[in-house]
Image (cartoon, rainbow, N blue to C red; front, side, top):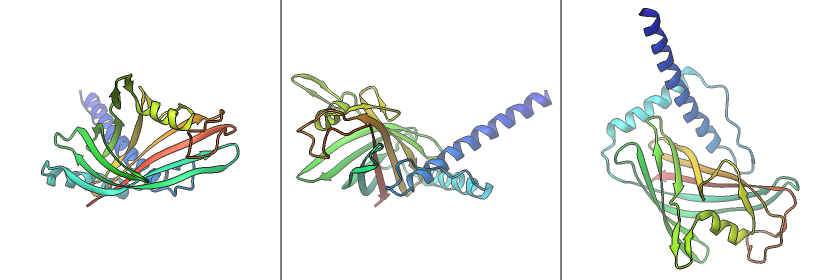
Length: 224
């Protein structure tokens, strides 16, 4: 019985440590300079850093009153042609957002994004862990039109002429994986595309593009 109990305690400690490592890994990934195409995760994390991360979120949850949280910051659109090593776009749009963590598990993020020539208002939904790991996505469908359901991937493909694929694409939406630490929300959606046809509607960058194209949409928001 003592061996079984020890194994259970060890499994629990490993699970907690893994959650904290993922949290800190995403922290370093989100802090990577935008010029780097593939963010690196620091492998050298001390026990003190792990304890601080766990304590910070523990303090946040203990003091959280359940009210929506006001945030301001940017949504960065970063696109890079891998074969030609060409920066295709790197644009920051100012955002105002409201984060709702009322049940401490399900998350909604209501965003007002100031894009050139227009204001975009939309909602993302997702999950958050007690360590602050957060996953967000647009609604599916993103909108319903007289012609049928419209997904965010349809909008991107229609604008860019690119075929999207990769880990940040799922069920017709983008998936943002990041963290919220009580003060900062950082969440990138990373995906790839093939842009091998000429597309006059693409006013983001010239097409066609030879080889795969790397995309990263990233929220960088701070508590207001």
